[in-house]
Image 1 (spheres, helix red, strand yellow):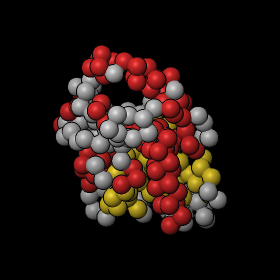
Image 2: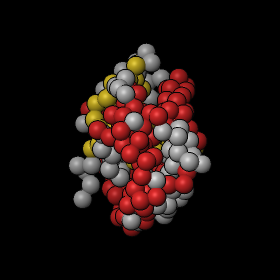
Image 3: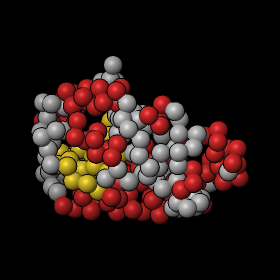
Length: 211
């Protein structure tokens, strides 16, 4: 797949390699991260290095990253010689008071909101956080603004699980609640092509290159 997209450039078409950041300490503890930070684990760092080796034969024209530390550090490992454009629009959803809590703690302390999150996420506004519909709009706006700046480029984006899920449901023109039908592992690869302001998903959640 990687060789195919490196060789098959098409006028007016951009190719995106959209990747979730490496595994963090809070990922291993199953804590909600949101816009708070947690350090990359040794495994997260090593997997980012594996990804870097996997794409070493390719010419990546541009690199964009969420401005949150775990994403930026992953981007630096993947493409150390590239200028990394920080994009605030790709920040993870602001989960407010949920950040730093495990799922069990959230279910215990915010049972009604958690139930709504599972069934009707588009209606949820996180306490001291943001509405998912607002996050959806900022993520889409950030992506399409980037797309409008480039033509026939290969672009790496390093972001977060929910950000990538929102992008994918947006590309599919699917309801927001379909985010729960999409899996995004750490360092998962998604390949997307755009042309004439339309997106085609080629690969989703590919972690086959990882040990």
